Amino acid sequence: MTTGRILARNTGLNLLGQVGPLIVAFFAVPVLVAGLGIDRFGILTLAWTAIGYFSLFDLGLSRALTQAVSAALGGGRHEELPELSLTALVALALLGALGGLVLAALAPLLVERVLRIPAPLHDEAQRSFYLLAASLPFVLGTAGLRSLLEAHQDFGLATMLRVPYAIFNFVAPLAILPFSHSLVPVVGVLVVGRVLVWFAHAVVCARRYAFLRQWAPIRRATVVPMLRQGGWMTVSNIVSPLMVNLDRFLVAALLSVTAVAHYATPYDMLMKLLLIPTALLGVLFPAFAATFDQDRGATARLLERAIRLMIVAMFPFAIVLVTFAHEGLFLWLGSDFAQASTSIVQWLAAGVFINSIGQIPFSALQAIGRSDITAKLHAVELPLYAIAIVWLTRTVGLPGVAMAWTLRVAFDTAMLLWLSSNRLPETRPALRAPLLIVVVLLGALIPAALLQKLGAKVAFDAIVLAAFGIYVWVHLLQADERLMLRRWTQWGQTRLNPTE
Image 1: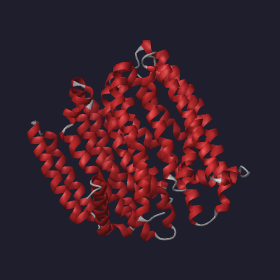
Image 2: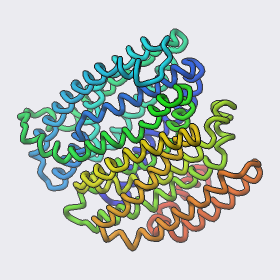
Image 3: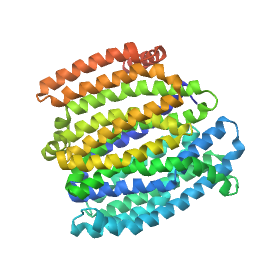
Image 4: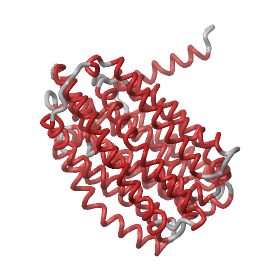
């Protein structure tokens, strides 16, 4: 489960499962903006955000289920699996129904009082929130079933189930546009997709895992330990999505839904870059949980290796996005977005790079049973972040929201690294050099953001990336990682030149 080859394979499968939808989103979003109009598209992004946030009603059970099943498999306690799994899945269904009722009750207040939605769109927006509320039990149920796949390291199956729905999420609204520009059928078809993806997960898991076909009692005593472990995760699940999504709701309240679109559209696309840490951490979470009790040195080595590889994977994206933000937005969404959102993209690109590093100690702390640490940290950050958004928005305007987000994730990452090093002191010597290079690389983003001429931008990025590549090969990659890259290169050359 924790060998380099298995981790690489499973990370690749996770990554593959998200690259296709990212490409589809890149081409679908401009069409959706043009077809729905900027106000309706802004409401759609808020609706997507709301359903994601109300998934917090799982009370950390899906994540706790992954940890519990991973620990049971690692310890050979297979007899615990039926009761653990069935109890958690029933609890998730009930919690999803409760969350749906709460979201439906709050929908009129959100539409008419909290968000600055144009009056002619109130009815569409409210009915869209009702539809999303009905889908919440299926959303939570799918999360629970996916946690079983992840605990068993069945990332190939998880990818096969994830990709069709993720693509459907963008293609289905496009199919509605020729017939209607109303939000209601667009959201309705997305809800149908959520039901179908839950059904597909249920069928696959029932066939794959025989213990799900066994009768098991639904015990309160079984779910309570998972709720206790998930309780602190729930605090993070409440606070962390609120911090992730607070910005656009405050933008809607302080500015307009048009400003939400100018901020949320590049934000959502840039957040797709986090598919790289998400792919890795989906694999590492059960690996952290499985190794911590038996070999903490192995856990520390996993954390250190993940940070090094994250730097290698994410910095090239960061510097290219910062340097060519204006050109990219102009080609993708036009001159209005390029003018309004260039500095937003530059700040967020730096923040994504920082955040990708911070997600690694965050995952490690939760996997080793210290979700209380991450919850307390996020509880401290929330009011400070809200104040920063309001102050910077009023001071700087819309780019101030991106500045506040990046400053928050920088503080969050620094604290998580410090806290995880206290729990895993074995990582301290090995992390010094990678973290120093992170600071240097962030410094390189400053001149990249200031360049104006295209030729200067191309030359600057070429020099920085060449120097970065040399440093990575000589200092960041270990011998086995360099050997693996050589083998992949040789395999690729063989595939390109089969007759040689």
